[in-house]
Length: 314
Image (cartoon, rainbow, N blue to C red):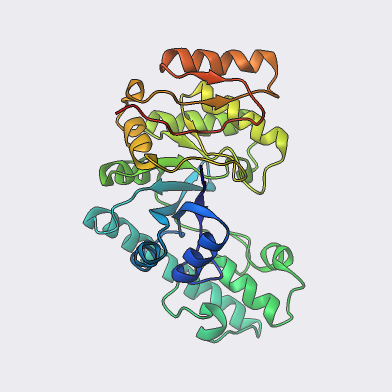
């Protein structure tokens, strides 16, 4: 058994460390595998893959793509992406051009009020990073203009506000179609961060599932226990593979194959696929039992909630 993390950033987007440093940190933390999922770029993937081979840790090439639902920004994860795919590259280039226009206008608006930054202040150690609002927020804090990230976002970086133009988004349909054609496993990131409430969050999840999404990030550092519990239930209702708990051991052997099987709809080909679902209300257990029955999965009632133990038949 080992540990995996399927949502990690580097300084290729808004992370702190280089892809190689992220691999080293993952190895030192005892992970057997992790997914590098930078925002709207796969630029850090080659470096991470090479370092992963050196350190004998599996690096899952991934991405976190920005989109929108009902006017609110959402993030869509793609795991096992082919970073050499020209169709994906074309989509990301379109997003880069839009982001560059927005960043230029945002920096012009800030400069008009006497707030300016050097490229080094924005990019840090990676001059080729994808500049996001987080980079500008960090720079505002570093200059002492804001006391923290929350203040920076609320005062200066609200979409549609005085400084930050409304962001142009690709539709979920285009993003999911591109990722699926790429061969990636598609999942929705941190659903409760969008502040939709339970009903609308499930509407979003149902819509994404209809588009072909196969996974759901059930566990995230921003979730409380109740929110993760609700997402577990939604994952079952919509036949989605939930993210493993970040503190739960998961065998990484066959990780790629599990996602491929689910992506291809060949759910009956893997067995056993254990769901640990004690500490779940009795009515919620019925959801898990029905899911297990329909997909020939063996439910296991023990300790923690939702552990994926990847034991595949040959």
